[in-house]
Length: 411
Image (tube, rainbow, N blue to C red; front, side, top):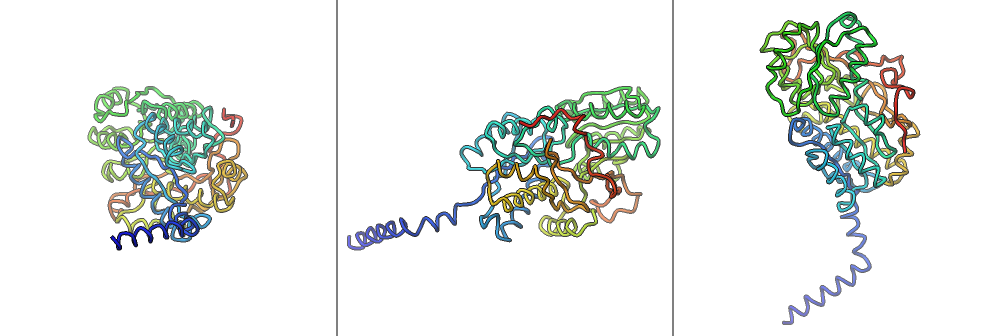
């Protein structure tokens, strides 16, 4: 009994002491800056989302090891966005219940749109990292959403410069296979505009549902149409499936793509991949920052980072820079900071910056092809990265939509 009374008294004394001193300790343990991070972890984009999570985790670790943000640790809450409705529900819960200061992530353009709408309603910053549809930066833009990855227009123009150089557009017949959701529809719109402006002839297009895995009916139509070029407007593992089956069909027409991620290329394999494709980043990029990131990622995961790992990594670093320099996690202050032209080291030869009027990050992009047989050092090494576009003496905005072409009105 005595021991119990002593324990109770000791507990009461501790409680009294905590009324004065423990809040500081508790705040030190719980006063983290929470980041709501959504990305596909299942479905046809799941393989890309896996790299996205790995990339943002390394950024979180690096930032926290060097003192965090404003002396506080970051806590990234990563969840599977699943689909547009679920993504929006999770985004709202992260803001309301989980205490997220800002939202980040997403690969699916359809889901990114619903998350963006949640951000706008709540007047909270959303750094939309990976979705590429122009409409997100156009008629569906809003004050609280910023876009990191290159949009469809830049992807088409990146590959288009190579096609024009090789006389592969004027007078040529194109047949395209297009993902049947908002991203694919938008990409097809941009591709059609490019063909029309450069005297290319789109003789056929097939919309492909996102759950299709057998492309033989579509490839039979391609064979019957006899185009000069097959154009791939697909996304995620569908690109991989198409590339493999295209090689099996042995069709003679060159294939070009306006969308391909490194993970999809790796999955397709050196023996199947061909043609010209665009990318926002590749692990062979020869800059000190990029090489250091690749080395750290490879040591940790025994494989090089894919472009989604890189973009999530630099995105969290950009967010941390904005919070440190504004000394705030308030969305209004962060929006103002991004809009005023702050520059960011994104591990490329040139720094990036957000345009104030559509919130798109301006940065270099790259075309890539496949190395000659026997030149790859390992299974990750068969892609040949082309020179950065725009060139070093060109504005970073020359491949992007102009203000006159864009329908974005921030509100």
